[in-house]
Length: 122
Image (tube, rainbow, N blue to C red; front, side):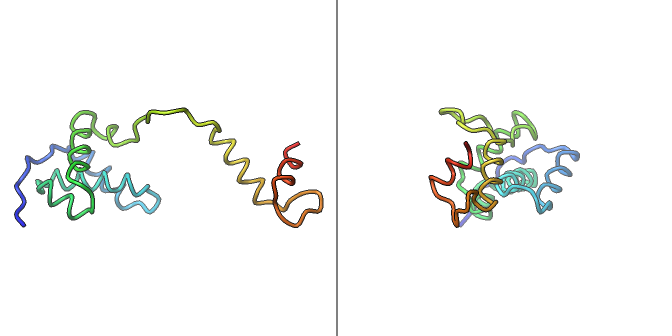
């Protein structure tokens, strides 16, 4: 399979260092790592189809992140707002619910149930 060369993406050294650190960090989200790898490979002049094949993504995905980086730099690699209804619960609400469910149920119950969770929140 032949891969046609794409124009190399222009990435300054500071951004390269940030992207490399993102790829190496064990706590980085995998989708952020994939985006960083796309930009780094594109900066090296790797063909778009080769980048897609190497990273297991589509050609359109590579093109998307190349464009976003060209337009907005590193900020373009962040998650964009998505359409739809806003979340019903805040992150703090979700964290509180998870914390409550990790504790044993109250009132002598042996396991969580809808009735136990209603009485625990009352």
